[in-house]
Image 1 (cartoon, rainbow, N blue to C red):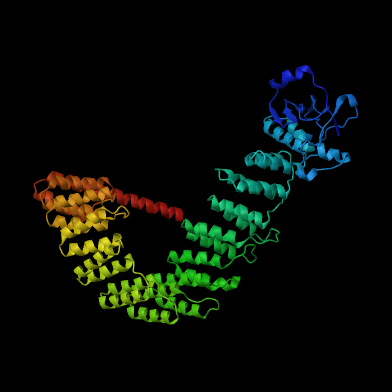
Image 2 (cartoon, rainbow, N blue to C red; image 1 turned 30 degrees about the vertical axis):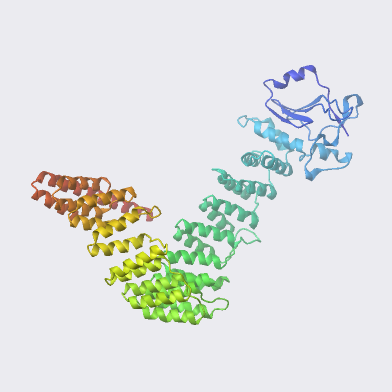
Length: 627
């Protein structure tokens, strides 16, 4: 193979680094350089090749406006050199084996050298020029096939999808080039894998350019793009793409996969946009002709979201529509609705659904189904109905678990039936279910409720012996019971145990009974120590705690500390109620401090008025937004 290469002048090497040189691309055997208005192909020596190939020192220069699409072949022996086939790297698409196809090899629009030239021209073109010679040249010589390989090169070799997009946009808007669906697909998938800020906005613009070319992505590509938008948190764009695809005016043969649709629904629900998810779902299923597939999971997502939002009746409405769309409810559907009706207090309806589950082919209730209804009966205090259903579950050979026993034990403890509680506990152990912290906490609560504090403390000791460490609510039950019996020192010891537990996030309601007990006993110093422990645990004082402390200090005649606590209360944004203000004012007046009493009333009233005004403004703003 012979390529015409003009011999190099001596001055060319000196001009290599002059001001006109603005871009360069090099390979082991050749270099492309772009000067102001010329493209130079520079062949460099190849010492690894035998003579005459070892000396190649020539340059070929083209004006941008006249550069041919192929390197000219020459039959002038004095000005030619034999080059190996590896001199140029070709695209897989345009490989050729004969010299008769050499034009397609060396100069075809998709040849790698031409692709790199186009990349260089695009990077270095001056878009501010009124007459852009680069655009004129590309408008005449660039086609959609070459554009595909240019974009592929920018994506793969240069690893720059943003540059590829700018080229796509430039060729579309400036050159009016119609791109192929393969080009759009390549660029969309490249942008979809990126996570940088703004990248997904470019993907949306690619979709808009596709619409101009009347090109529609197939369901696989569209699903990938929508999933990318969902993962990036661009849920509005994802919704728009799904709704556009669902338009009956657009000709399409493929249906969008339900997995894509379900992912968007789940994402909306996860950010607590339940209403938006339900409206979107209704918009899709309400179309007479749908291009989006639905499955049971689609309905389950919406039904679960509505049940959590206490809209179980609306969820049940979607349940009744499932068969219309060819979707059959599964056990997840039934369990979700059963639990939803139980939480709403409609245990009868939940029990009906449980019975219906037994009659559905391929769907039978499990321990979760039965436990939900049993829990519903226990919360209503209907323990007889709960135990009947429990026996029925055993009759269905469904083994109860620890949760099942815990809800029953808790139900009996709440009504003070400790005999039945212990019977259920024994049955729990006999069936091999291991009691946990919740089990023992319920039993402790039951004993304390019926005045059997010592029995509760024995269970407390049994927990520690078994290395079942009490949780926050176990501490709360014991502390409340001890304070009610006036056993403040023992309650204080339990609080010290809580202080040593770094794994528990303390809550104010655990400390208040002990603080209140010591304040009423006149030991405000110990109450203040407990407050310090609260603050060390990063537990904020609430209105009840402040009120207890203020009244306690007033009763001891420590008015300065009472005023200081009141100011601290106001300072942290805790609004005092009338009980707090009146108690402190009354004590200040009795102590002969009318001025302090007046200032306190004024600051308390101003604080309350400010909070009330802020609340009213927030309500008005919310109303305007809703309208």
